[in-house]
Amino acid sequence: MKVTVSRKAHFNAAHRLFNPKWSDEKNKTIFGKCSNLNYHGHNYELIVSVRGELDPETGFVMNLDDLRKIIEVEVEEYLDHKNLNLDVEEFKTLNPTAENIVIVIWKKIKAKLENHLDLKVTLYETPRNFVEFSGE
Image 1 (cartoon, one colour):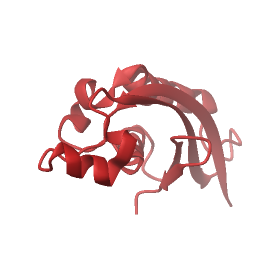
Image 2 (cartoon, rainbow, N blue to C red):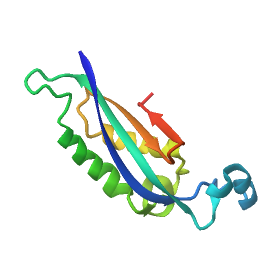
Image 3 (cartoon, rainbow, N blue to C red):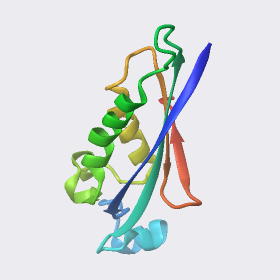
Image 4 (spheres, rainbow, N blue to C red):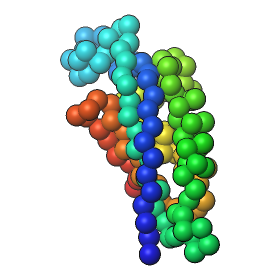
């Protein structure tokens, strides 16, 4: 029987959405105020969900304290209070859209989980705008 466990987290970060191949005018047309030359910030909310079989000895899918530590290192310490475009290696060449951010987070967390566990990450950029990624 498979069960899903989830943990919430958050981080604050600034970014600018833009394509360096385009003019500032075209970037503004496509990305609007999100292409502000001086960046803008979000209070990101995150839900990390891990699905798997229950361990018959512990009754856990995984120890939630282990998941907390993974999120702390791989997401919070890595992204919190950063300018994503300037401070985070992946986004020096990758537009830091919510879609790209959730994929980067998923890859970092998935690399720390046991292979038999499934992972879904939900990232809220605002209370009304969110994206999900489960590796597919």
